[in-house]
Length: 264
Image (cartoon, rainbow, N blue to C red; front, side):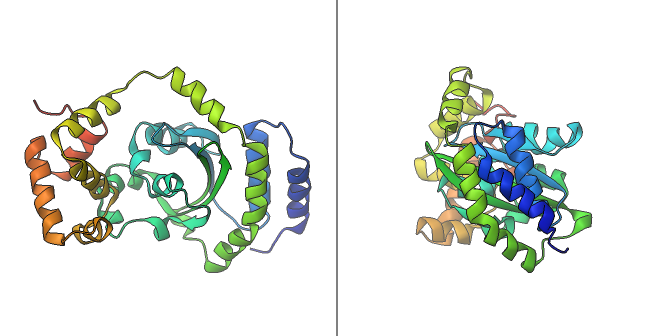
């Protein structure tokens, strides 16, 4: 794709003058900027803070796609998303999903039970930290039929990162108040209750291990992250299944997301 300079300069001009605009206007300006450089199928912009339910700021999905990419995602799977993990660190910059995903991501329960439904070939995110312990992630996606982004396209995105970061810092620098407002209106849900019951059964290390397992880390990868032997991780995994009264990763996922009751 050749750079559309008219669209690029028009979007850049609007970025300079953005002030007190709504989420849709800011999101559409970002879309126009990126469309002048590369082609993609979807865009979604999420704000993350801690373990709180992410706020969807903007997206280009139709109603059916929105249910998968936003509603289902916000219902719990975001906690196992490599983009969420990177946002929590935080890890500013432009990142490909495959650069952040664990070594067994495509065999993980998160991938099998949720991510495969998206039918994406690739996802690239701009990670920006505007303040208030919030990270904004602007994701560009390509469907399986469109293929992955080429290295040259990824390089263009990285060059555009300072401009995108400046826009986010200007437009979405007060998101902490929106998270506080949302939190005041949320009651404890089944996921919180399930995680609390799971934590009561497990040690702190075992709780950390189940999250890494569901994200797609192998026993070897978990051992390296926690600084223990691979054999020890395997023992922990067997103990976790025994304590929770389960026998599969699918059941572990259901427990983690509150879709299955923790056995008494």
